[in-house]
Structure formats: structure tokens, C-alpha cells
Image (cartoon, rainbow, N blue to C red; front, side, top):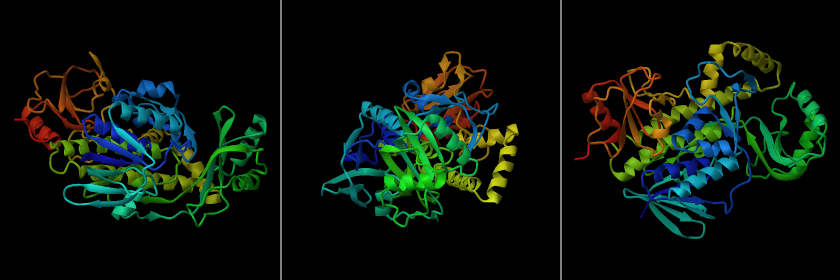
Length: 475
């Protein structure tokens, strides 16, 4: 039997598959599309996702196909200077089209031994105490111990399992696509600058090779969300909003998105789990969607692998929902706020002007940037040291960098005392005896996702934390 079936070969699904393979889990990824999509909905990674890539040894690959950017705030189109003292050793994001991200993560997962099957549409899901069975459109059936739906906002897995998806319906709709423009760059720039004085859901981005990403408000909210966006509709809206269609032609792809926000009421139903857009949808303001999905996978992967491999302590798999649902809810909340600030009515314009002035305060800028980039995420692990529940940034050690020691996806004890031990958990936790001027505590215990679960120097306390997060000691 397959250990885990992942439905959906986007960035979330392939990140999850790779994380599972680091722990030897037999994983099969099922993807409905026969070929990778050319759509570039997600255009990059924020600082926390950059950290994840570094933690798994993928950062150099990312840098080879992307460009760094530093924008503070990045909130409702309000851009400020990068804030000082943001808690990260990677103070930048990466402009990286989603197809490039997807390709890189797919290569990574396949190198680790994941199996990808394209042209496989899931039309049925059933489960019992021993496993999950999926039925494909061609009548084939596959069984696994667990199933994870990473199949997008219209997730078949979520619907088939009956997980609720409450939230707020769409009030506005926006058209998005890649195409070529006939108008000269100076004209395009002048028109965009003028329109954006009042309409911030409008603009163009040069994607290279003569192709531009174009965004324009739709005429209304379509009743049929599955209806395809037509090129004629796109040109008509450009003329209505900007007075010109820029001579657009040769569309590569066309799409639409709304300001609807919805979140699964539970991320787990028995042996079925959800991650990425299958668990939450929101408007793409702030560029958080792709990042949120990858980070879901990073949180879930090691926990599901521990469960499959039999060493997970009680409640570990359920901690995925407990930790990630609040993070998703916060993203939904901030995107609602951003859509309000992007409005064209006088009250929204005045509110945005006020918000922009507030972000000139360094502390406000740092708070907003930390929220958008997710470097400020802190899981509720109870009372304790300020580091508890936070991820530890990449710190310099005498013998190298911290993230360079985390490529295998194991737990890590950074021991600056040299007196501690991981005896009994050597198969799950690496013991690093080293010192760093950036860490002012005797020792820290990190989970495979880099979050701190213990701070101190007492071996007895440490053993308790080992058991809580890494199960019983090996006999």
C-alpha cells in the first residue's frame, strides 16, 4: 500500500512530497493536468519561504532562476523601505514566476524518490480505520494510509470528504493574464501611472520576452466561476478602465480572481488532510498565497511522516490544524483589510493615505513586513522563553551556518554547553555542539521545520521535550 497520496502537483503538493520523502515515506502525487500550467499567478517568495528553501538546500537553485527584491510593508500597494531589525538572515524576497517554483520543487521531490502521475483526476474518496481509497476518472482505484488534498481552491478532495469551507463571498472581481502589447513602453507607463492614481487593481508588469502580465478590474462578479475568461472581455475592460487596450494580442493565458475569503473549518478529517489553497482562499494582495501553501506543507510534512513511520507522539498530527489554521485565518484577515484599502471610494482612499503615513513609523513597517513575509509566525506552545514557538533564523556558528545543517529535515539540538545528549533520539534528532554569538541561550531544540520547542540546559527537561515532539526514546 502507498503511504501517502498527495492530490495536486503545484508548489504545495510538491513541497509536501519532498518533505515526506526526506523521511522515506512512499508518496504518490496525483495531478489532473497532463502538463504543468503556464499560469504565473504566484510571482515570488517572501523571506520565510526563502528561509525554507535554504533549510532544505534549495536556495542556490532558487537564486539561479529569480531576482531578489526588498520592499517593506508590501501591503495594499503601500511600499516602504525594508525595515531595520527584521528577525531574519534573509532580508529579501525572490521574484520567481510560479512555473519556475513549481518546476524546481518538482525536480527536488522527484530526485528524492516521489512518484508523480499526471492526467489523474480524483472523483471519489472513501476511508476507514486502516486507510483511504481514491477513485480516478478512468475508473482506477488507489489505496494509501493517508491522503492530502493540495488541489486548489476548488479542491475535489475537500468536497468529496465533506469538509466545510465557510467564509465571505466575492464582492469584486479582477482579470489577470499574460499577453503581448503593441503600444510603446512610454505610452503604457504613462497610462498605467494615470489610472493607478485612482484604481490600484490595474497595472502591467514586463515578464520578459515581449510578454506582459496585465491586471484590470472586471465589469462585475461573474455568476459562473468556472466560466473561462475571454480575450474580448479582457480588451473591453482595458478600454473601459484605461481608455485603451494597449493593442494587446497573443494571450498566453487568461484568468480571474475575486476578493472571496474562505477557510476549511478543519484541516484534517480522519486520514484525509488539506493544505494550500484547498484549505484557504483569499485575494492575492500581498503575494501571500503560494507562500502560505508551501509553509503549510513544511509544517505538515514531518508530522505526517512521523505518523506513517510510527514514532509520532500523541496529538502530533492534530497539531497541524492547531498551528496552521490560525496562521491561515490571519492571512485571510489581512487580505480583507488590503482589499478595503484598495477601494476607490473616498473613505477607502483616505484610509489608505493614513495607513501609508503610519507605515513611515519603523515599528509599524516592521510589524506589517513581518506579517506579510511570515517571519513573525509564532505557534502557541505555552508559556516559556520568548523564542518558544518561533522559528530560529539562520545563525552563524563557528563551524558554519545553522540552516546548512538542516537539509535532512530532522530535529536539531543546538547545544552551546557541550553537556547535553540526544541519546535515545539519535535517529530523529541531530546533536550540534557549537556556539553562536547570535544565540544568547545555553541550548535550543528545533523541530524539523525550524521552530523552537525548548530552551534551556537541563537534561531532564530536554528529555521531556524530546518525548513530546519526537515520541518515545528508542530502546
